[in-house]
Image (cartoon, rainbow, N blue to C red; front, side):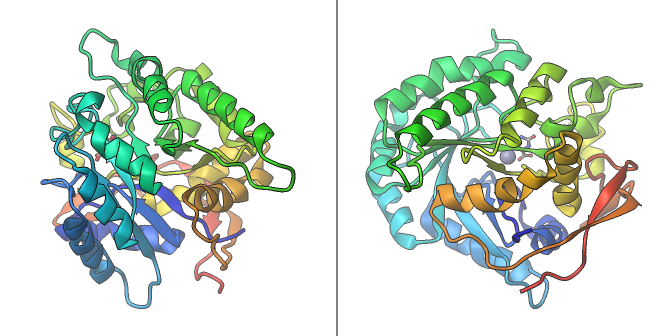
Length: 357
Ligand code: DOR
Ligand code: ZN
């Protein structure tokens, strides 16, 4: 299959970055790098410096390309958006509702506060990447994504109809259905022979395709299955699998691999995030094979993302081999250990070593 890209990834900084970046670079040609560092990446200068640190942390000979994002705050100006677009290295701006997840304290307190930035993004055609959960304490954790669609996403898209939006790491039937409906309309509206002008897309993680919320509670509390948005019921997993394997161009691969040291997940207030970078493509292959849709994996992993982001598709190829191997129980992570997603489980596919040109 064509060499894939990861359209949603956390690689952290410092020794954590050093520990994880090689795993992604071995699987993917490019990745959209999330900006939720401490402090967050809010300016183009910070994104440039972070990009340089990522490139410096790569194994020798790697041609992996980090695609940078800015972290939207109430203070982001239209001028900062124009500067980001002009840089050529910033490919999106991430909206975290303040308090929604890891390092989101500096996030957006209300959409009205970021009107100027969103207008500028629409004008210069810089995509908005959204963490789609409301933070209202009155809304049940498992309902926060579905409520976000009605309360935030639909009004936002009505106000900024040309703004291109990626609904990140979708986890619900409601999100899959909403993105599917918009995509079908936009595909139908495209002139014959022309690619559709999509203004809405969604990334889907391996954990949300493979597991439902029972995984968090099976035989005890399992912190390594805890991420945000949290795993949902089986009906939602099935809807996501249907969307991912539909062939619709609005759905593409975004691992949301989000490394945290094992001791900070196995904790009284455990961190949210699943670490899937070392075996991401194999996990997706398992999900697609389970749905009888392996033939659709290549477009999900390698075509739809670059088409939406208006970047060239990769030229190289990778090969997945059928074999049987066990996901390690833990891996080194700076001075600590990290537990990869589905550690100890057996996978039936493995990425063959060495990327083909
Ligand atoms: O589970 C998550 N982990 N969800 C997020 O939105 C953030 C991420 C992280 O940075 O750890
Ligand atoms: Zn994320």
